[in-house]
Image 1 (cartoon, rainbow, N blue to C red):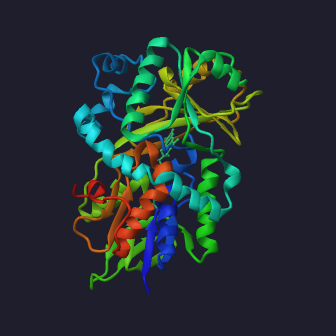
Image 2: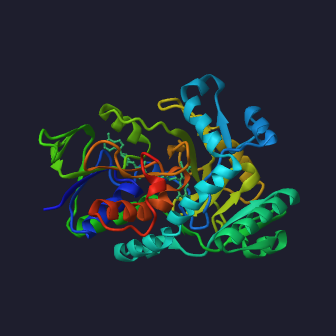
Image 3: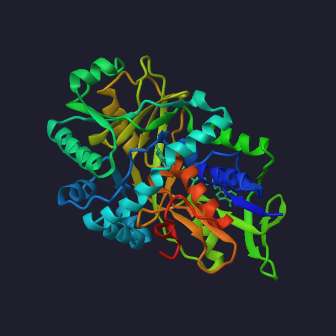
Length: 411
Ligand SMILES: Cc1cc2nc3c(=O)[nH]c(=O)nc-3n(C[C@H](O)[C@H](O)[C@H](O)COP(=O)(O)OP(=O)(O)OC[C@H]3O[C@@H](n4cnc5c(N)ncnc54)[C@H](O)[C@@H]3O)c2cc1C
């Protein structure tokens, strides 16, 4: 019997568990919380097939000055915490150089090209179509100069990757989006992305499909991971007892680095915390919209209009800083009648970003039958099922649809 344990039931882990089950494995999925309650719960819910380039670190003097002086709402940080994550941040900065970023984007685009199709299969099988809107999303620009810059960039992306978009003047944006009271200089409508009315519920629906089709979900904390003496099996000590299987997959998102350390495996990440809050808007938007110059997203969701913020570079356990959310709230109030906050306390969660912006998908460097699937940064919700298919093929020993070498741990 082919057996596997998947650790972590976010979008990446649940999709991995389903893929392995489809390949005839008997799979146990483990998480200390119900599926999809952490980072995969709190994101902007965009299945971003347009996002062919991973999110690079700004390198322009002006942008860096804005971040350093706290003028940018895209990225905030505390100077005193910087030494704690300077190493991975510097590597991220190095990989963000134009030529290196272009090469990375080619690999990234090959994986993201599989995102919509792989989600689609799961959405249909899980009966989750009621959560999905397949009509794109928008990036809105406040100033003509930024709008023109955005359009130039969009044209480059279209030329390189065939990505579909259309430009909307401010009047056209307002006509198509009656919930907006102002549309700045205009917007780009990206045609291909899909948006999800409740990201956590989509993960739950995929997890329910996994269980319906024979998978086992164990709600327990993973405490220790070790190989059996024969080296043929993996043993996972959890708060609910000992589990064993031939293969183990680490899909623990931002917690993967900590889980791998005791095995001597070192995967430093750039930790980009984000926040969200919901608002009871009287006229919700029809499309998820990013207010580009103010670094936040407005997403119409079941729970209300969700504002999600950019990156707060901070260390685990540090208290929340709501500066970005408060600024976003003020900026959003200039675009629409936002309404009152739904919850008392905003949500926060951390994007697991690798310094070279590519997720780690493949075998662990030294341990047989230990598999890695984490580090999906800004697009793990999008990439979960596509990454699962790539890893599943590697575990089964068949040729994957995507070239695996750029994603290997020892790249
Ligand atoms: C504000 C914000 C907006 C975003 N917007 C988007 C977007 O629009 N589109 C997009 O594609 N991506 C987006 N992302 C990124 C995306 O949310 C993440 O990349 C993705 O959710 C990562 O999924 P994951 O399964 O790797 O991790 P997670 O969803 O965090 O899952 C990891 C799981 O591991 C479990 N775990 C950890 N430690 C243990 C342990 N010891 N024992 C048991 N279980 C454990 C956790 O409980 C958790 O369920 C956004 C992120 C943020 C923060």
